[in-house]
Each structure stands twice: as structure tokens, then as C-alpha cells.
Picture (cartoon, rainbow, N blue to C red):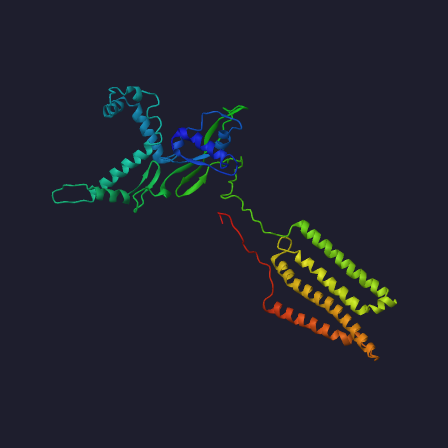
Length: 404
């Protein structure tokens, strides 16, 4: 990517919502160079927001404090300060319409720093030279001659290991490239430069935050991300899961209606008990009125477990709620309608005997036997169901997005 394209890319990334949001981290290669530093960005502009907290991952030929690297730096400085050596270098520099290279070699900064490429070139030349020397030392012929083939030289380079300016040089025997665990990398961070920034214009500076050497990363100072924090944002956006739980409003309405049913059932039971001596209440057969009230109470209470899900109780609690719903509904429904039918059957029995001018006494127990049988049938069925294959609460994924 050309340096002139970075602004265009980062502007497009900002407009797409993948840069400058505080949720994304952009790392560039060492080809960026000083493209982001020494420039002024208007505060709040897309580029200022997009470039803030970015970084570069660079391969390094060495760092101050490394023995071989410091020796190379010192050697290059001595070479640049030697008049005789500079004259010799001038004679070796290519002549492409330029006969005098002293404008370069006489500069005060000439060979004062190794630059980015020199350490790698040094290690490459040393690896080629050492491997050739090793081949020559281990090669013996009767006439003392020595021929260096490309294949033998390549194999010798791959097999060689030595201390270079960029650390211990180890090659990958399969690819012939350098083993990345032996390489030296630095992670740099672009942050505000307070000395060069103003209230309206921001300039960034590059500071090294981490070093990869000896196969492991070593932190020098915290990396400041786009959000301004030193804690890395998550690799992926936070997963948004719609668990389809019962809304709080709907649960409140259901429980309110459940409360109304419970209050009315208990209220009518108390009222029936107090008024059971009254003729019209006695004719309505209070025993069956009690059973109807209990049945409606059980069915109303079924709303309570129906309102429970893993959003308010544990998965085990939700499973227990699932099991209790059919028990409450089936038993309550059976008691309510069996009582209605039994009550009607008792009246019908009395009326038929009255039409035949027969006197008969029909007790509640006489007509309640079918109701008891139906209730026992429900209890047996529910018990077998609960014992063999009980209902349970499970989370089933119905739909996922393209990220799964």
C-alpha cells in the first residue's frame, strides 16, 4: 500500500464504523514509516479519530544493549569517520551519472546510525560467509580444490546458527526463512505528542510499547488503544442474545390476574362457609362449591410457574416450574368440571325419582365417585409422566447471525 493511500483507507474505515470507534485496533506494517508522525490533524476529524491509538508491528535488526548490535553500530561509526575507508567506499559506489559521492559520504550523519536495513544486510552477508567457510573447512580433496554449489551452500545456510546483530539467527529447515521465534519485533504505538499539539491540532508520536525476542513478548510500557484505555478491546463485538424471556410487563399482568383469581377463590370459599345455612346456598350444594373454588384456585396458581423462566430463576427452578404446570392445570380443571357435572347429576337423580313419586336420598359421596375416579386417573397419569419423562426447561437456538 502506498503511503499516500493510508489517509484514504482510514477515512473509508472511519465512515464504515470500523476505525475511530474505540472498539477497533489498527496495526500497520513497518512500511508506514513516519507517515503518521510530524503531521497535524484537526481535533475531532475522521483521520484524527481513526489514527489515534493505532500502531506498527516492525521487524528490527537489533536494539541498543544487544552486544552484536552495539558492535555493529560502533563499527559503522568508525567506518564513517575514517577518511581512508570513505575513499575506498566511494570507489565502490555505483557510477550512474554521478562521479562524486562525497555529498553523501562527507555528511556528518554518514554511517552514524545503522538505519533499518543495514543490520539485516549484515546478518545476511555473515550467514552466507560463515556457511561457505564451514563448507570449505569440512571439504577435503586430494588436490586441495574446492567448488561451492548452490544447493550445498543453501543447505549450509539453513543449517547454520550464529549470533547476529538482530539476535540469534536460526533458520527454518523446510522453508529456508528465518525462524520467527529467533527474530526481533517491536510494537509501536501512535499517541498524542503534547509538545507539538495544540487545542485545535493534534500531532502523534511513535513510542515502543512491546518487544518480541527469544520467542516471547516483553512489555516496555502500556499500549494506549483507540478508546484511550490500556486494556485491549474484545476481539469480537459483544454477542447480543435474545433469549426470548417473558417480558417484565407481561409477567406483572399475569401475576396480577393470578392474584385476582386467588383472592376471589378464597373469598367465595369464605362467603360460602358463612352463608351455607341459607336456603339458596344450601340448595347450591356447598360441598361442590368448595371443590369448584379449589379447582379454580389451582388453575389460577398455574400462572405462577408459567411466569418463571431462566431469566428470573435457575435452570433447575425453571424445570420444576415446567413440571408443576400440568399438575395444577389438570387437577384444577378435573376438580372444577367434575364438581359441576356431579352437582348437576345429583339434581338430575333427585328430579327423576321425584317424577316417579319415589323418595330417595342421594348423598354427595354417592355422586362424587365418578369425580374421584377422574381425579385419580389424572394423578396416576401425571405421576407416570413425571417419573418417566418429566418436562424440563431447555434453551434452543432458533436463529443465528452470520457469525454464529
